[in-house]
Structure formats: C-alpha cells, structure tokens
Length: 410
Image (cartoon, rainbow, N blue to C red; front, side, top):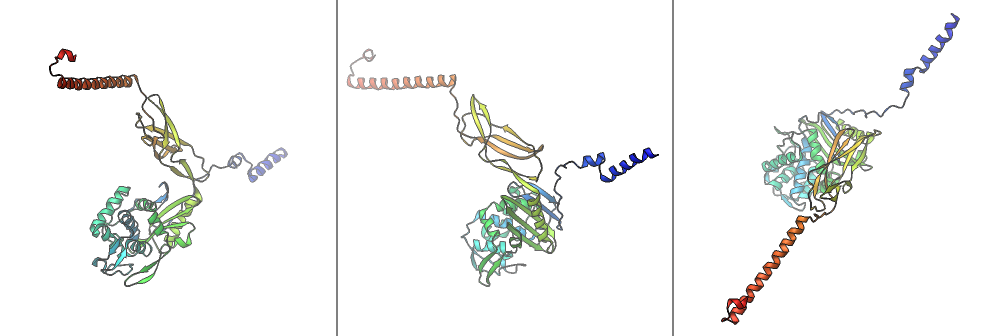
C-alpha cells in the first residue's frame, strides 16, 4: 500500500500542474490565427483595400438595398469626368419641390459646377444633384442612363439607379460590393477626393448664404479619415461610405441599412479591423523585371506594367508564387509591347493578374532569308536604274542623231 502512495501523489501533482503530455503539446507557440471578424448593426457591409480592391470582410455584400444619398458618389463621378468644374450651371424649374436636404436653389439661379458638387457632396443637397444631372446630360432620364451604363462598365452589375440624388424610387438599389467598387474608382479621381475630404465650404446662393458643413462626422472623429459620403432615408436607413489612410495603407468601408449613430461605429469598426489586423505586401512593383524570354535567339526582358499589393493577416506567413503566361512572343518588339501576363498567387490562391510587357525595344535578327531578300532588292534596284539610264541615253541619241541606226545605239 505504501508503495502506491508516491505514484498516486506524483500523478496528482502532474495533473494539477499541467505537466501532462497534452499540456506540454499545447504550450508550444501557436500558429497565427485569422483575425476575429467584426460585427455591425447594418444589414450589409464590406471592407476593401482601397488600392487593390481586395475584399477583407463582408456581410451580405450582394444584398440589393436602397443606397440613399450615397448615390451621389456616382453622380459626382460622372459630372467630374464629363464636364469642367468652371462650367456655369443654370438651374431649371425641375428643382422646385424636391424633398429632403437642399441648398434652396431657385429656377434661373446660376452656379459653377464646382460649387454644386460641394453642395451635393458636403451638404447632400438633393436639388444640387438634379441641377448637376441636367447640366451633364440635358435631362434626368438621360443622366440616369449614364449612371447605369457607368456602373455596369465598372463591374457594379447588381445595381440599378433611377435618381441622381438617391431619393426613394421603385427600382433604385445597389449592393455594398457594387457601392464599394464605384466609391473606389471615384476616390482615384483627385478632384473627387479633394471635395469629399473637405470639412467646410462657403455657399453663396440666391436664397441662402452659409458655410456648408460636411455631413461625414468621421472626418473629425476618425484618425486618417479621407471621406467619403453619408446617406439616409426612412426606406434605406443610415448608410455610410467611409475611407481612411494611415502609414501608407488605405481602406474603404461601406455600410447599408444601419440605424441611428450605429452607422458611425459600424464603419469605424470595419476600418479599425483593417488597420489592426492586416499588413500590406507589395507583391509586384510597376516597372520591375519579372522574367525573361528567348525569342528568335534574342533575350527579351519582361517587365510588370502595373503594381500589385495584397493585404495579408498580420503575422501570417505567406508563400507567394509567380507564373508568367506568354501570349505573344514575336520580334520585333517595342518597349511596352504586351507579351502576356503575370499571375500571382498567395498560399495557393490567385490574388492578381498583372500585364507583362517588353522592357526594351528588340529588333528582329537578320536571317539568311533576310540577306537573300535584301540582295534581290538591291540587284533589282541596280537593274532598274540601269534600264532607266539606257532608255534616256537612247532617246537623247535618237533626238540628236536621227540618221543613226539601232546598231550604233548598241
């Protein structure tokens, strides 16, 4: 009995101290875990890397919802791309009686397109959006056609727009993913980017003189905030597209169908999720040599046309693979001629495709066929010149010595 006491005691000590084999295995350094996904009040949302467009998190990203005034992102993008900021916009009768936020435009009133863009994007003026639409396209219906064509061209294929300001209308909807796609393109435009980052702007209207204050509270409350647009209707709920940049990284978040002040914390939570849990990897740099080809015996350096960045969970070890796919390999080549594309994968998953181009001009080498052809052309040219000179000589002799025969002319 006494001999059993020590083994039993040691077993109790090992078990209570955690020094059992299972505990030893668990004490080893754990592998990095995926970041814990955030939760939001909004019905739908998405977080993307603003540079690459990579989706980092999403909730119901393809659910079709009313976007309210976030619609004005697309309206502003079309106006900036198709008109000059100095254009004078003459306000029509159509602005009378428009619901919601306005800058109290009156028929016949004149403003620069620049001022109306600030009114629409900062103050969310619905009347300014109609005035802009009519200036760009001549009428709201024609402008709406442009909106849907532009959205489709950007890949926002689950959206349909009916109004330029986002006021409720049957068939007016978008998705968090589509809105992020549109917003990302808009933020690549320096004029748009400057406007949505502006906190205040002076307004001198016929009926109203004031200082417009940007409705996007994140500009004042969120570090690194760069824009972009708020939205609210009773049908849509609280909507917000927010973006921020810190330490060379930029993220863009969309939340649709939130409620009250939750929309601010929803977007801030998504942006925090990006900054706190991801690091940005430069996988490809525009202009760098990514390979070489042997074409007709000549070495051709292959260059990346664009850059490619990738947001990776912080601390995660990544295996990056590159595959050069050649579509064209014929000489001669000029610098910048496309040869194919570079396929980039991270941990076995394709994350991007970059056009691959010739890094320099490469001439076609001369072959035996080329020399024979050149010699043929040279001999033919000599013969043609000799024939012309002989003909001219005969005509000259015939004119000066008409009695001489053909034998003399030899």
